[in-house]
Length: 156
Image (cartoon, rainbow, N blue to C red; front, side, top):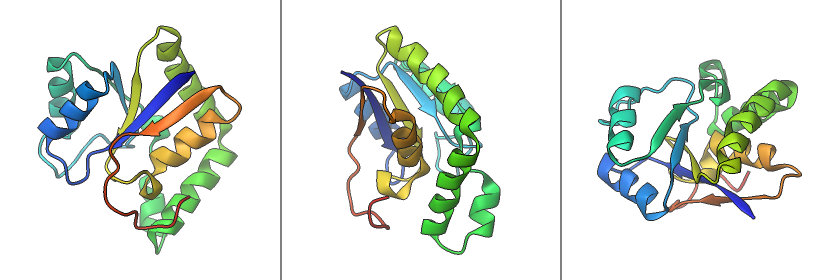
């Protein structure tokens, strides 16, 4: 069975993050943030992609799969942000189609693929919603690498 991995960089150094990917033999990291920018050193697009390339990991920025900023601005709670994203995927099936084309292309080539964004725990993050929605009827397992800690929310 094919597998898709996810990993958040919250409370991690760039070195720790890259090592977790290497330990899991990840070949391709798909950054599913809308904007590949971070206050956290090393996690903005250029520095992040350079560090991954130096480790032999391909970097892909899939901004189309990101959680739109307007949802974060409009929502009053973290749960509401995630609910808006879930609805966004339901009303925009082309996102899942494009995501499927991207991920399936790598999986067909035998590449190990990991989704990444900020939140450490997958229950706090849109990447889990995206992976679950995409998985649908596919024979693919989703594994969240080293989530650590407790989620802010109950499971989504």
